[in-house]
Image (cartoon, rainbow, N blue to C red; front, side, top):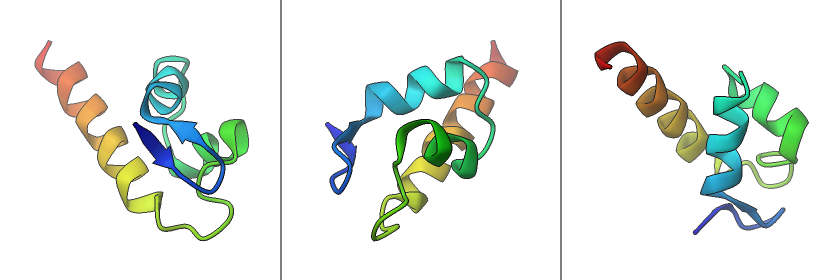
Length: 59
């Protein structure tokens, strides 16, 4: 599924960025372009970041 339709960035690509060390929506934007057009996906990206942090702290 696309996380960012404008730039055709998938959720998998976002999670790959997070796994590679991205800790903010800006870092993900810089790496993928997601959120740099209409910015509607920023909320989704922030939710994905939050989930990743929660999963990391419970593991």
